[in-house]
Length: 61
Figure (tube, rainbow, N blue to C red):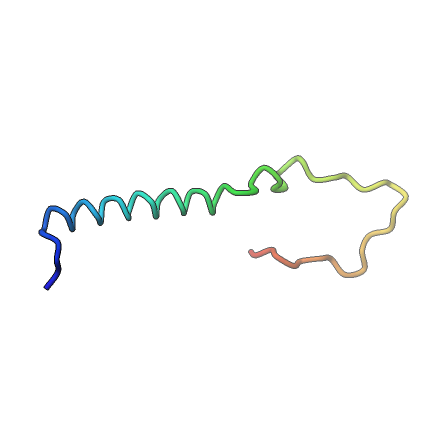
């Protein structure tokens, strides 16, 4: 049996769920300011040839 009564277990679970939510939000938004957003990609110089093989690492459909 647990050394905690039911109200303490509920309080503990509430605290752990809130901390997990904060952790998930941090993981999602950490470094998102460096993300390449639509319209912010660099435009290559007109004289540069196109890549022979496009770099598709890290991209999904």
